Each structure stands twice: as structure tokens, then as C-alpha cells.
Amino acid sequence: MKKIISSLTIIGLLVSVLGPALAVATDGTISTGLTRDTTGGATPIVKAKWEANADRYTDDAITAGAQFLPSGQYGVKKTIALCAIVTDPDGLADITTAPGAVYGDVFYPTTPGATPEPIELGDSHVALPGQSGLGCGELMQEDKLAKLSKADGIDLFCNLVRNNNNNLPKFNTSPITYTYDEICATDGELQKETAVVYCGTKDLSYEDPSGDYAVWAVVQDKVGLQGKLVNKFTYLPVTAFETDFNQVLYGNVRLATHKVISGDLTWDALNAGGASVRNVGNTRLSMRVWQDDMGFGKTDGIWNVRYDARVGSFAAWANYSPEQTKTLADALDLSEKDEMDFSIDVSKFPPTHEEESYTGTMTLSAIGIAHLVCGD
Image 1 (cartoon, rainbow, N blue to C red):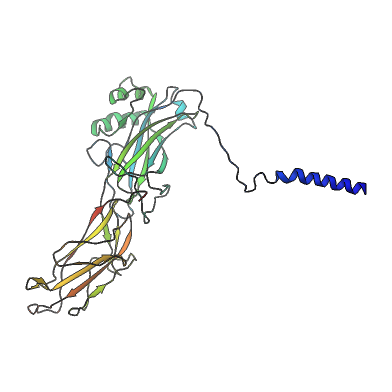
Image 2 (cartoon, rainbow, N blue to C red):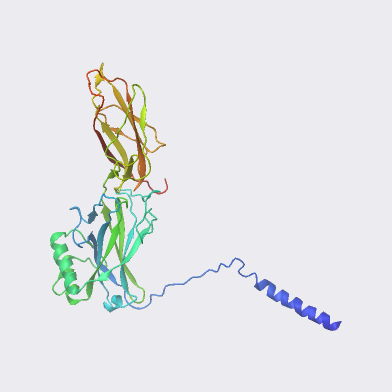
């Protein structure tokens, strides 16, 4: 009996010791952390930076900094260049030897003006591969830049940029104010190869929103010290759309009978299905419609025909007379596709019109409207 009691006592002790240990991390979550060690050496410097078209020195406007036009075509992206001139007081090997590197960080845009607001992409926007798709001023993508040869770097910055687009770059003002003269001097750092030009490419989608994009040029040395220079480029607004139809055939129409021609959400070959429209610009837009009278004319100064149109099945019909431009409700967000419905109502078939058929012209256009902003 004493042996049994002794064994039970030992088991009881084991349970009392092991029991609390099993409850240390019951949900499996363990916090981690570190502090970046950047001791030793001097911080590298971004002396100048710029964005440009793929040729690395042009942009699409004459104002200072870079401005770019989107393609205005479905699926056609815009390729731009990101460039920076970097140096390191400890020597270029501190940058050019891994893990030293130069990066370009592009952030989603804000609205232009004195009180910029971060732009919401909307539900239809599709990010390019490698992009975060976050919108709202968040990081879009980080790209690693590549070192140019001495000759290529000097020709690009000191010749092509300086002589053809000299208000393109942003110059650093710390620890000194850098200039073309300082960087391109015959005894300057580019010539001595104590500074170097880095460039890379970045794709913007046709549907990435117009606005001001912040860009960081970040140079990192071998111990993790980082230099940074920030500027912005502008993606210029282009309002554009395309349709899968170029005719609206009302068919057989009876007097004083509202005849509706419904569109659909399927993008078809031209005129192969119901009418569809899609936004292929980098702004939100509202569609507009204008039609002639198709030969119905007027009686007592009143048109003998009226029309309706709408974008989407849930929008209210917009009623309009011939030769009147009507803006339709239900705006198209970035890259959004929707159906277009049309209708006609004839109040009189004029006796002077001898033919049974009537033909006319419809003109579609669009106006850009404000982006959605984050937090609305």
C-alpha cells in the first residue's frame, strides 16, 4: 500500500508541473521582433532623381517634373523609367556590393491641388501583375534599379536630360544642394565614378487613376543605411471609352409606343450582341448622347420623336429630344464595363416622309468626373 501511495504522489507532482507548461501558448501565436542594426559607416546619398518615358529623358508635358499620358486603349499599358544618381561617402562598393542596392518605390496617387486626397480605385480596377492594388496612397510596387555604365550614365544625365528636358529631375538639397554643374563637372563624381546613375522601368496600367504619384528613390548600403529622395510625377487625365456597337437599330416601331433596345454586359464582336460600353481612360466618366431627328421633324414646334438612354439596368432613363446633348446617370468607374439601353417614342409619322424607313445619326461622348476618394 505504501508503494501505491508513493506512485500516486509522483504522478500528482508530474501533473502539477506539466499542467501549467501546456497553457503557455494555447492559440499558437508567438510575438517576434528585432531592431535594425545600422552601426558603422556613413549614409549613402541620392543626389538627383527623375521619371521619364521609356527613353529615360522625355515626358509628355513641358512643365517641371514628369507628366505622362495613358494610352487611352483597353489593355495597353504605359512604360516609364525611374532613374536616380547615387553616391556613398564610404565608396560605391558599399552600394554596388550585395546587399547594397537602389530601389524605386511608387505609391498610388492623390488628387492634384492644394488639398490632395488619396484616390480609391473602385471595384472594377484590376492591378497589373506585381502591383499591390491597394490604392489610397499606399505602396503600389517596389522596383530594383540597375546600374548604368559610366559612359551611358553621363550621356543620359549630362547630355540628354540636361540639354533636352532640364526641368525634369529633382535635386537633393542635403547635405548640399546638388546641381547639373556639380554632378556633370569634368572633375565631378560621375567622371570620377564615385557616383553612378541607376535606372529601371515601371508599368502603369491604362486604368491606373490620373493624379500625382509619389516616388521614392532609396539607396541602401551593405550595413543597411539608407538614403532617400522623394518627388512626384503626374499621370495626366484622359477620358476615353469604347463600345462594341456602332449602330442602334430600333426595328419596327409603332406610333406612340415606347420601343426599348436593351444592351448587355457581354463584350461582343462589333454589333454582334447587345450594346456595351467600357471605360478605357484613367478617369471616371459619365456618358453623353446626342441624336438627330431621323427625319421625323416637328409639329407646332414640338419634335415628333423623343428618345431615352441609360447606362446600366438600374439607372434611371434619361429622356431627351433631338439635337440635345444629354448626360447619362450612373458613372463608369476605372475600367468598368456596363450595358447601354436605348429607346424611342414616335408621336407622329410625318406625311411628307414617303419612305417607310427612317435613318439618323447618334453621337456618343463622355465627360470626366472626380475620382472616388478614400474614406468616402
